[in-house]
Image (cartoon, rainbow, N blue to C red; front, side, top):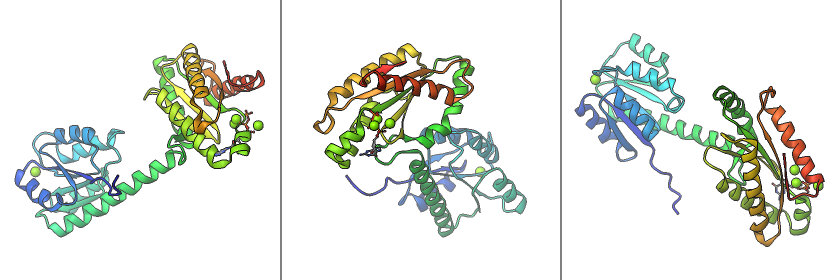
Length: 293
Ligand code: GH3
Ligand code: MG
Ligand code: MG
Ligand code: MG
Ligand code: MG
């Protein structure tokens, strides 16, 4: 394990190989440098490599730098990558245009290494800080799972997409049984370890299309799509059984699970959540360590 951060990636886009050479020479000691010689190649590489910054020429054969920038800002996958125009067009109108369509900076040729370096450093640092803040805002620190905030931010979009495509979508609430008692008996630190181990199991058992979140203290929500109520029930039972055999930290741990499927009559996420929560309540009332629909 090393504490060093991986090098940030800078994508240089210019139709002139000699311009690329000059910029790469300035940056390659401190950055992983990728290069493209057209707007189309820039779009392909931006999607493939997710660079932390793009240096973009304006005048190129095929689609111009302006058009390329507009397309980058249109796609959710590339929207947050900062773009700096590096161009021979040394006039205010072009600079205004470049900044208006979403570039963070505008540098004119001939390239001055110190200025290029300083501006690249500034925007790569900002990008990395933004990525870090987003990561913190979306995830639970203890378990590394997505958090409640993330779930509530993304769920409406997921529900409308499922409704539009007519794909079944289901929700599980997984709640540890008598967890207060486990904490009281074994201590909070052991309780935390159990939460981590149960989280890891839930995450492993779910597919990448499923969204596993720590929604509250010892309560997890799992959004599954495409997934009918029957399939959700089956998966819930597999996970419940595995957790009962996990013996995290050497302690017998069980969960109760409530399941619900998004239905045509639901107006929002809360309607489905309420059904899953009612089902969880029944699973608890019936004696715990079971799944209810
Ligand atoms: P039930 O079977 O009815 O769900 O009982 P329970 O004890 O699990 O439920 P209750 O809601 O009474 O208590 C939940 C407990 O979870 C209380 C709280 O101390 C514990 N808890 C919540 N978050 C954490 C955490 O981050 N770490 C630890 N160690 N415990 C936590
Ligand atoms: Mg050019
Ligand atoms: Mg509980
Ligand atoms: Mg209790
Ligand atoms: Mg609970």
